[in-house]
Length: 213
Image (cartoon, rainbow, N blue to C red; front, side, top):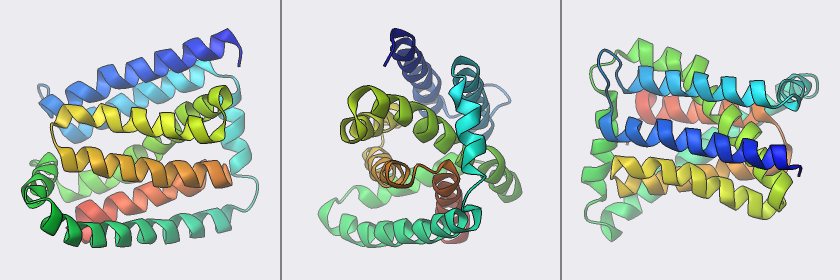
């Protein structure tokens, strides 16, 4: 990995922390609620990722050229697998962690007064795809290039989990770690951003809109 890639990785990780930690602490800044802020943060991160890496666009375009239907199907199936894992985890956490129920309800407090339609549209168009394009196709890829597939995967999961610490919610941090491991493994295994973007988006809609815990 050349030094410019190391600087790029540091810059992207630092910027993600600067943007996301206050987001989870404040949840709202002026007229912008959590969902608008999350979307704006991701747009900025995607701009930085694409403008600083010439390979970024080529990698995304190449992903669309082979096995598109298979990737979408695997993305949908994997979202339901992850939802099932969380369904079981929710039942167990209520027994093992007495505070789990209250903290899970606090996560749903992020919804605020945002309409269901706006949340779904932002999840579909920005948040689900945007998170995966940034965290997996950009940050995890750079980490794997630098430290190898296994260590790079775990380091990117650690970074993904750490930015959620601003919420002060242990269940959210644990959920981020589990999701980061799952989507990170999918990206490492299939090298498809389409697959993980579909998985993330469907899972978000299941958890927040269709069948909340």
